[in-house]
Length: 149
Image 1 (cartoon, rainbow, N blue to C red):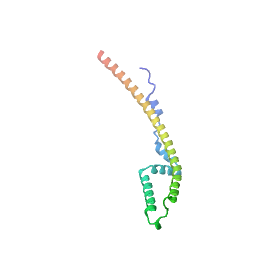
Image 2 (cartoon, rainbow, N blue to C red):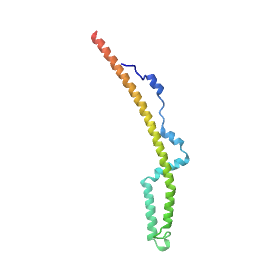
Image 3 (cartoon, rainbow, N blue to C red):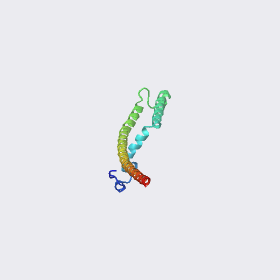
Image 4 (cartoon, helix red, strand yellow):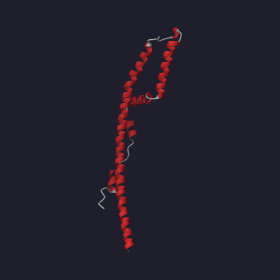
């Protein structure tokens, strides 16, 4: 058999501790980055959608069906409701975009770390297979020697 290109010593020299990318990523985030990720993760849920839906139904229902004296945002314009809704959108949109950008960068770093781990595993498996092949050859030589004696 050809000489083994990867010895155990070479593999041990190449071995690096596995890094937890999630912890490293979290440690690098500023407070504003954490806020953006928090908002991005919460706004994209059915719970948030339900809150906005209930708030809208209550607001519009109150201002359509309540007694005239109790209405504070008259039908059909709902100017205050439109203003508040637009303000919520204007504040959430940039935060969500920043959060998605941060999540995308984190996903790329995780993919690179996965690739490193997979490459390391492939090298180690290749070495193990080469050692097993060598052991098989040695066992066959020993068996042949025992049979001939």
